[in-house]
Structures are given as C-alpha cells and as structure tokens.
Image (cartoon, rainbow, N blue to C red; front, top):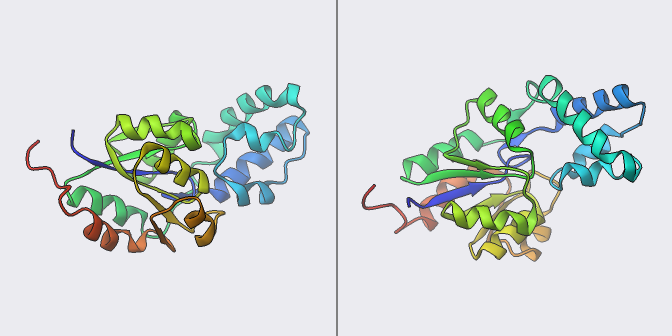
Length: 208
C-alpha cells in the first residue's frame, strides 16, 4: 500500500466555524433550545454529542443530533473555507507520491460535502471517529503521519504508533499539542510542504 498522510478536517483542513455557527443558530431556531454558537465553535474537535450535551438534556441529545445533521448541509457547507495552506498541503502530499486520508469526528457524509464543495480531494475518508478511535482507521489506511489541531488528534497518532503533526489553527496551543505527544507543531499548514519534504525522505513508493 502506498504510504499516506492523514489529516483531521475541522480547523485542520477547513475553517468550518462560520458554517457550524450558522447551523447551531438554525438548531436553536428549530428546537427553541439556546446554543451559544460563538462559544461552541471555539471548542471544535470532540464529537457533536459532546457539544450538544452542554445545551440539551440527556434525553433530548439524540433527537438534537438528528435535527442538527439535517440542517447542516443547508447552513454549514457554503460558509466554510480552507485553512491557510490546506490546498497546498494536499498538493504537496500528492507531489511526494503519497496518499491523503482524512480521519475526522464529523459524520462521513457531511465531511464529504465539505471536501466536494471546496474541491479538496482525499484518497480515503473515515468519519465519526475521535481520539483513540481514529487510530484503527489510521493503521488500516497506511497513514505514516497524522496532522491535526486538537490534543485528541495527537492521542490518535500516538495510539496508532505514528508521529503527530499539530497545527495551532484550532482550540489547542502549541504547548497543549506538544504535551499531548505531537512530534512537530506548525502555526498552520503553510509550513507543511517544507516539513513533509524533510520527514518523507524514503517514503516515496518505488512501485505502484
């Protein structure tokens, strides 16, 4: 299998804060339950149920998940943009002869909508996974390095036995990511092509 670079989605490859905030506001309008959208988008990363648990009674969370996901395509896709350097990072992976794998806590079909809308290609996508739960997908898809903005992404990389590359475009600081086991930390993905050039020596496949 051709080696791969894995990427988290929200706040790693895409800045989904405006779209997710709009989806949360639509959820408030639909359910009558107040969700502080501006606060919620400062802590993207954990599964949707975790955030909804701050706002909805336990017995209403599953219904809220269904409602939010029904609203998501209408409200959250168009406002979302790539993070700085994301498109170039994916291009650099392909130029190095490697595969790209997106592993995210977001539901897979919603993650695909973002990638398709932005024209961002991934060879594989695995969704609805978080922290240690991402490790199985990382191993299954031959990921050699995993890039993410959250301490849980570094946990995923460590669990999979691969280097984690942190970016501080999300809610976690450089020190947070290092403390969680990151091998490298970048301010954003603009520096990723140069880093990949340094660490990927010997990973270029010699045959298909």
